[in-house]
Image (tube, rainbow, N blue to C red; front, top):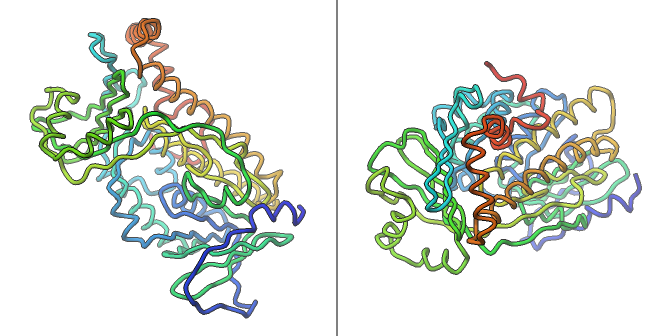
Length: 429
């Protein structure tokens, strides 16, 4: 590998306050893998490497308490739950996770509803719903018991320096700039990844015309562990069941409409929400704050360079319909951990491009399929064009009446299609 290749990831520079700098090279901390970004995906990779024999550092810029209390919730598909079980964190997560026992799929005022149940897939559940806090706390607890993982939080990456056999990082922590050297740098720093941009990796995709409003709702009646995906001409509307009879709503609407709804007071918002939500669960109560975020599709031209791998949203982003985003990142983490551990066991350089290419081939194609699936699903259902209305309702009829078609759709939604990482195969039956 040449210095020119390393230079692609060697130009990070940030303004920082006056700090103490380590000048003694003997104080440089050496790691095999440094992960930038301590969210769910970065923490999953660090935990997945606990028995790899590799020395790992995980850098998170935000204080730990800020990361844990994020008011977010996710659909966790069956593959992700099996990965968490293989890592050894699922038992701790499980009490705070709610199962999905049915999924109801419908299209606007069309009378036909497609109902997915466990027997369609021969599984106990169809997935789970969990708050960000529950998942991240379990991962962080696991990290505290991993002797080969150093968790630096809050720690800000200030600069990267290219070398022949790795990358040197300058990291600001507690007013001191420390130097870390690593054979592999992993970017798990989100959709606006600074590392990806500095590496010159191009992305392709677009911003959608829609935005998503998310909120926690407490309905009057039990949710019975049913998840709903309701398609409307202006965008999908999802209801996800959480513990304690809470629900998470993900309301997709044109950006101007979403902004107008966010400007409503709670009473007016609940009135508008009730019309979209339906009366099946009685009166609704808003719990906590509402949030709005833009939607986008993004795919990186490559997921790896020499000494660099992209993970999760740093590599790809998809429309939230179907709740696939975080699950793609969890799958990335398990796949990369598997490849790195195998390379290390065979004495290979884990930062070499020929090793990392296996991760790129595995995950970029599978992610592309999911990105395409969510894009087509959103575009096909978020309109009133008559030919598409007829086509999609024919599709719903097919899902309702042709069991193999229903099973294929479920396999895709639950993550059970494609190549499963070894960690997911360690699950208990």
